[in-house]
Length: 622
Picture 1 (spheres, one colour):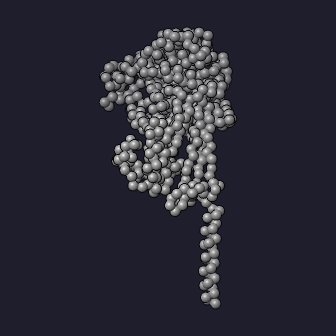
Picture 2 (picture 1 turned 180 degrees about the vertical axis):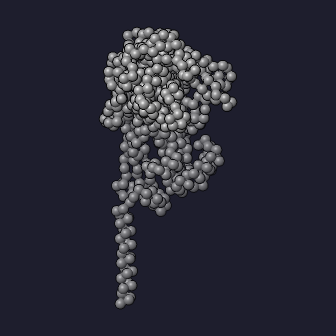
């Protein structure tokens, strides 16, 4: 009986093992099991990455062929290392390091040994590859840029790293992935899906045909074409005007939230980050700590907004009912905070809302700011109301764009000042600089452009975005198609817009008019400080300008920020007017403005912290 029981147990265990092995062999094959099977070779078929087009169907980014030398470490044989390195253009030490890295990744799976061979190198190498067992050449596609602009917008692709391999099972060593900009944000759509073939090998490591007759093979799926909202012509023209200048420009279509141009200066040619020189070029660009060409100022710079911020304080005061368009304040060539006088350039006299804006009177907005807080019993209550109005325009927080990076800017709250001064120990006079867009407020160029679009729309905006269509699908996430309303009633916008229109007619931008286009704008001049040898030093002021046009049917709203650009109507104002004319007319009639911007640079200003030259300090800020 015991023998029978023991025999039965052995038979049952044997049948169980045989059944399980048969199931695994015949029915259950996971990709990981196949990849680890030394009798099966995996060959990937990489699709072309999706093309990128601008809003008008102009091609921005295509593809070009490239070739990678691949290695499967366990299949390699003894070879003449020096000869092989000579063919590949590699030092022997680099070859050894790359082989160690490939073995560490996987002895059975292919790794890139040399990436992105040129056509010429490929042609001379392919005939000799048969001598080197375990090595082969794989065709790949690299980006081919049809424009020299929009580098920070488009982004770049590079080889996946160890973190990518650990966190995303889709990728294998040597594959390319979007790192910044559009390439990163829409990576899943652009990359497509690679195909795979499984090849059965015999005991002599020879290919004998498709594994399971190709039932597990998959075809590649092409990357999807993407249409973005950028206007190629406007983008290229804006970058041309930014030559020799540092700053950021964002232009938005008010009735959709589509980003028409997103310019950062200085920039770089996107072709520099393609091919075998990519790594060397990127290192040079990234570690340029002075010009910082890879730092996108259009969405990362956070200067004080300056006088364009006065328009929001005017709107908040109108909404709170503490002023009317005809409310007047007297300007004594400035205003007093205690015994200290803050200057103003407007010439003094009595100002109402209209003249306060088009002459950019600091005293008018200091009085307006005080009235907002004076309406409430406590400063804390006034602060809460003011903060709510400012943030309703998209300031002080991330806008929710489809850009892969950005900064929130800053709208300070009561907790911010309680920490600085103590709870209940500060008043509106302590933060009066916020009245004129100085002080603790900060905004990125894209936030200022969005703020301007909200004014142009008389009280609402769409979340700024850069995607227009993916493949054949033109429907967008509702976040980009729903209106976001400010806290200001519609009727309060007309007097502010009328005053911004008068900035071009009679005010601080009157010499920047464009024939045939009615523009509303606001100049801004922003104090600029840094530390040199441990001391706080005031540098040449930043130039800021916001505008939209046409006034009655806005098609473009923009913000221009120029570092060390003097007053607002100088560099920023010139560039803003030219971009508006270029977008609406398609040509430039103010060639005098264009000539100045194409010829003049600010390199002499940017050299001053190093040269020790004195800075140009404006007496007033407008």
